[in-house]
Amino acid sequence: MNKFLREDFRLEPASCYVDMRCPRYRAVIPAEEDLSPLMPYINRKAQVVFYDPKEPVIIFKLEGKKVALRTYEAQIANIKDIEEGKIYREKLAEYLDNIWLLKDSISPLYEPKERPPALTIYKLLPKTNCRACGEATCLAFASRLATGEAELSACRPLYEDKAHAATREELEKIL
Image 1 (cartoon, helix red, strand yellow):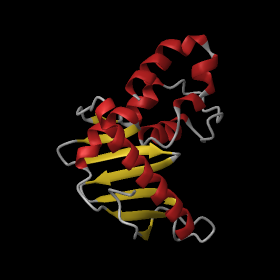
Image 2 (image 1 turned 90 degrees about the vertical axis):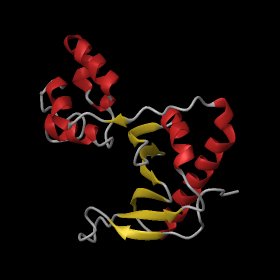
Image 3 (image 1 turned 180 degrees about the vertical axis):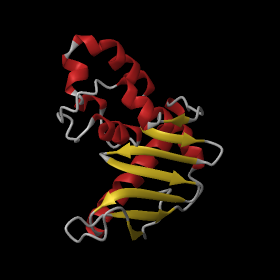
């Protein structure tokens, strides 16, 4: 079906592309038509990291990949090669088409969404630097939470120590 996205796309270097051991790219996909009417429905259904209806732009997660939609373009982050780009372009096209097909059963959410800054998140973390989350420090973990690249559930002290229950609930609310 692919109502919204064109078949063609390009890969652009991103993050650590200078290190050949971990080449990273983003797939940049032109849109066939304006994507902004989809954004309030995606804002309701997806794991949204950022949404500004005035811009308009929405950033959300799709199967672990960060996706950014602007009016006439989609970008998918952390793509390793052209083949993976093709796979995720197809997954995104299908997702957008499905959202559009189901829009009458989805209550659109026009409210902007912005993740709190890393320091705000850090202040609520246990600050144990236990590395259970996979990061060297709680501040590094907070930075990844702020960009939507980590899940709060990775912080074991928040979920295992009852002393952190109140701050865990506050973090779950703001994230």
